[in-house]
Length: 385
Image (tube, rainbow, N blue to C red; front, side):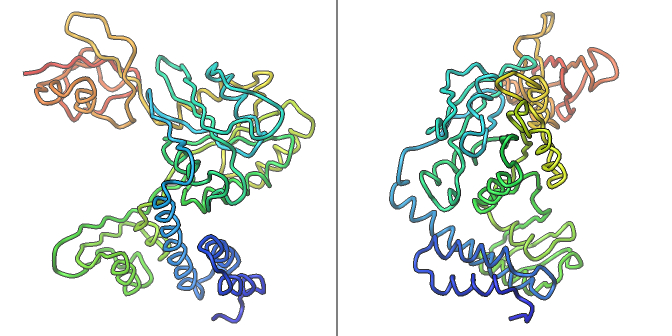
């Protein structure tokens, strides 16, 4: 035990020893993790706490499944190009934002907890449709099942991207802390990427590690692998990472999600002042101030939604015909073969070549192979054998 741990940490440790239920143990461990000094001397302690947290969260998840979920399903079937979840505290204005973006028939009221189940709506933008879902509000301890917490977290996890909605007329910094804390405890990683680690499993041969220079303790890495039931593998570490980063790379439950912030009710008193305070506290997050009620900055919000999804619109056509409408929405970096597969499996199986009009080629009608990467607005004409 390092001599410089705080009194707050020691109290949390006492709370962990006294905890009787799994949720109580999780809360105590989270408090221990948040209060332990972060330096090289406590690295293995932090790692041990995260490992225990992972074990108890898995146990909590299994008990939820065994109970049959403990409540109604919040699942929303994905439709259209992508699904975006509106996430926020009670009375932040999520329902108003959904209504102004999609014209969804949703209840809007000045009292909290208006939304009790996920409410979808469809945003039409740049010739494609994007599914927006107004989620029930996040409350404290939703991450360990308070209310219908497990169902809500599962529904948020299903989304392709998140919009965090804050009420600028209140205390957006404090509210952001609550939301980020609950999302982190629910094993979300916001605007971060998964550590660049590749694991190739084999039936024998033990554990071999490539990229040892990128980690501080190879033996600890091997120990983590064995604890995660990986005893024969080639582990390729491609960047400098901490032991905690490596543990995250083994956690299949982590959800890496892109997100941006909407500062709602920007027309109300103190909102400008609160916006400045928020930007100073969270410079890493892009925040768009808006008023859903007065429809201020709505077009900017639509453009940001399209941008964060990282999709491109591809128009297809038959030889001698005009481009078909509407376009197909594809992930940025998609190839002509990806487009062919999206159109029909026979186009993919019997692909011969394509002709392309648009940004990705030097001249219109240029012939291209299946590995050609398409860009937004391209027109693709597929020729088959």
